[in-house]
Image (cartoon, rainbow, N blue to C red; front, side, top):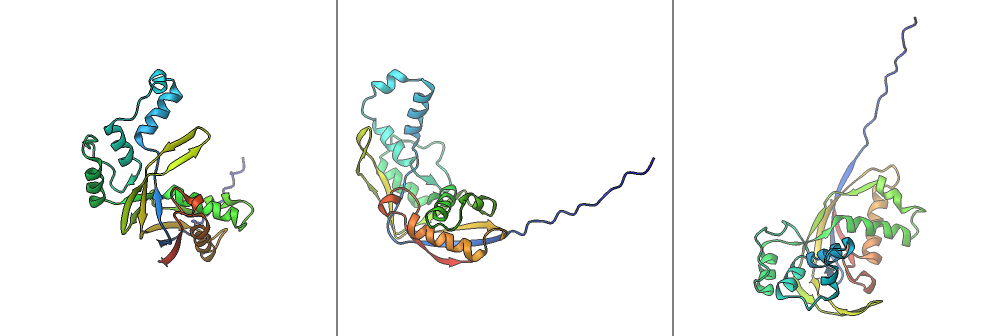
Length: 219
């Protein structure tokens, strides 16, 4: 019986590059993720638990208002396990902001880059970016000069409702990307991010012009 032939297969490693990009806001940034209070209500409604409670819901308690405000931000170090939402919310928020930074979602940044590809017609399929680039940071800390809470009345198909939005002035952030140049060159990737900052922005309120930025430095 003839010996089986073998063939050596050489797998070449993917050449991965890294870049750290500093972005600087051209206006105010609004950061508001789904807060814990709203998440619990949606989870109860979807599962059918607490249906009667939701239908007969009264005004939120002081503790719920505080929890909703605090947990509507991504926090750089996370929230302490023993946090007390019965504390004065202004003092609690000030304390947390003095100890750590709020964050932008790395996933949100990546999705904005994909939107920039579509809206500027850089490519036929923005999903190609998924095989080319990653935002390394899950959360991107934000530096800022001033923070305040906006309280706009928002209209929707369910009517109007009051909301509170964390708003930051004089903001900047740094994030790291990993990428290969199989589909887009380094210059093209930086250009995509540049147009995302100009036309897409990041955070909440992007349709109203919030969260716009420019690239200040690439390392």
